[in-house]
Amino acid sequence: MSPARVARRLSGWGRYPVADCELARPRTAEAALELLEQDCGDLIARGCGRSYGDSSLNQRLTIGTGALDRILAFDAERGTVTCEAGVTIGDLIATFLPRGWFPSVTPGTKFVSLGGAIAADVHGKNHHRDGSFSEIVDFIDLALGSGRGERCSRQENADLFAATCGGMGLTGLILRAGLRLRKVESAWIRQRRIRTAGLDATMDALNEGSVWAYSVAWIDCMSKGAALGRGVVFLGEHANVGELPAVKRIKPLAASTSRRPGVPIDLPAFALGSRAVQMFNAAYYRLQAPAEGLTGVDPYFYPLDGIENWNRAYGRRGFVQYQCVIPEEESRDGMQRLLSEISSARTGSFLAVLKKMGKESPGALSFPMPGYTLALDFPVSDANLALLDRLDAILAEHHGRIYLAKDSRASAAALRSGYPQLGAFLDVRDRFGLTERFSSIQSKRLKL
Image 1: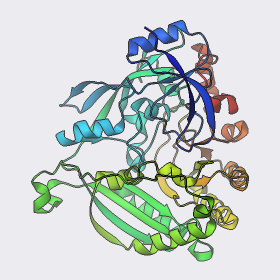
Image 2: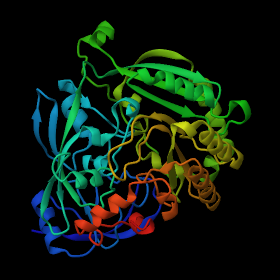
Image 3: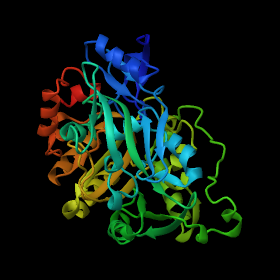
């Protein structure tokens, strides 16, 4: 039986833009296939709604996959798991970390569905070593426009597999997938914290820290002059049992838990002004003294997940996240220009993150490539949207690309300048009859 449709005002995690959508929530994969067979119009899938902009919004029909949340099979010898698309990274951690397994690739939030992780081909703090999420996916069961299902992998329907990984839901409805987990001895991360004086030092620390499994840097994007790009680099490794103090060796796989504070109201504009950002960044930089020690998986991988509804901190108009990657050979000059433009605009971000990226991802529309990626949050305002247009221009000059999972406002031209495999992606869409079937507000804006 097809699920009922209800009218909902929906947005991505950035709360911008907001759209009136028809939402259907099938409770089983069979119901999802039946819905696709009976409905002939365009639609898009939506998991946890953690993409930041309009990629999971279709006003005519948005299909919520949250009820497709069953873990179907697990091979304890190989660490492979088969799940429905609505299972989250957090579900995997809660189920398998006590057994000594952890997601091999994880983004900066565990509140993301596996379908969404594949569609965005998410990456984590270990991209420089392990690549993006598609690297750990063995197969995808995909529902096409007619309602029929197709198994996609590197061996079977390989072009459809490559288009689906990073394809932002535009190749079909992901029903289930098989992926590989990583064996770990504990629920703890051995962390080294390095404070840097400027952009060159930050990038050097990330480069030298690439021998570690995980690395990420927070950047003070309000700093100027010689201090431009100063920050704090966080390096990490999964701690072995022998590296834990005696009290933690008793239950090494027991993850620490704590009550999640929240942001109960939309903060006023003055709390987001340049002076507030400057003061916060300066204080945070001073507090992050160089150190080495143990931290839990949650504070290391998912610091913002510890604050419920943190997206409300940017006020009622919402915020946009800007994430880009610049090829390694142009990254220092490109990052300096981007940060200089942001600092000069005096509209910096509380959350500015710099990471070193590894190899090009196999997905036709995947974001990662060798180089450095910068992610920043900006409250929605005319001035900030104009700033992002200027950042797009700088990015194009340095042959970079924007991240579609974070985008809510880029132009079609900005997209095309950074994705050389876009033609191959569009060809797959056409050959499988998907162009008129799967679309989002984002795909229409970007002419995908």
